Image 1 (cartoon, rainbow, N blue to C red):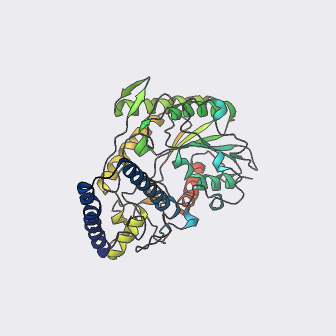
Image 2 (tube, rainbow, N blue to C red; image 1 turned 90 degrees about the horizontal axis):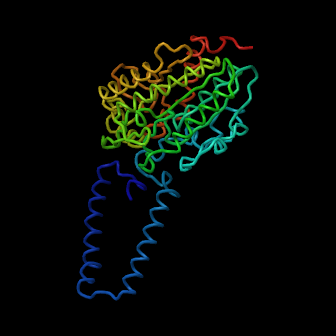
Image 3 (tube, rainbow, N blue to C red; image 1 turned 60 degrees about the horizontal axis):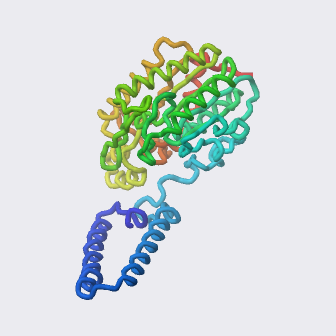
Length: 392
């Protein structure tokens, strides 16, 4: 209750929480447990009180979890992520002129029988360009949070922009991962990947660019560092059987290589983003603890252990480098350095030195962070000859 309302980021709030816990336990013992032992209630009373308790609890959790979550927090940082930094569902925070109906650009992750007709309509998820060519952004929510950056690049290069995504979906035809929401095989994702990549190969033209962005640290490497450093296991399925992480990585590599070769045969380029760094805590906790130690970098309180992050970043980079090895038209863009402390200590920053919030939560970047990547990504495309330096 305290975490969702007043907060629990100060010493006196911890004491209040402990006191309330013991106080409520004592009241429950005196007013409920002992009377029920001495004078058992009749069945109608038992059922009635149980139903009332269930309804009250459900409504209370629903109200705190949705209606008031983030609105009545009175800790040291009431709302660390301003509204103008939120990307998901906030069209007004995207670059002006981007007429993409975002709610229609996400395929249903619960649709186990997904077909080509269920893919997002490009009438709703495409913005025409002023010049020839198209940037097609594909992936999961980590593609969504790259949309502001890609939209800016599309506008500067005159290219059209199209967008399609599915929640928690690793783009890898033939490989089924675990859907983190349900903890079940993400069957719809495998179908979405196959169908969307097939559609891309059919509809795109020479010179067009497919950009894939995924939550690879979880979906591929099965790394998800929760607030207490808990590692959650991911499971992989191929051809109807469980496979090891090593087998899954090999399958992912072959899947990307196959698709890259297919695109190359049609003159279409492929760019895969190396996943952005993660935080070990929510931004509200970074802000609260950062204020306790003004002599230390704020990143200290949210960054994963530098050696741990460096290891997994190296592993992911090796996997993607293997996928792109000796395939013309297959490129990797790594945004990692833009999220690390400029001091070189390997810490992941949740705020930039100029004070901008860089993250929405533990894995998704903010509107400002996404836009900061636009220029580096544009320069990457120019340096690799994927777009003209001075489009007309």
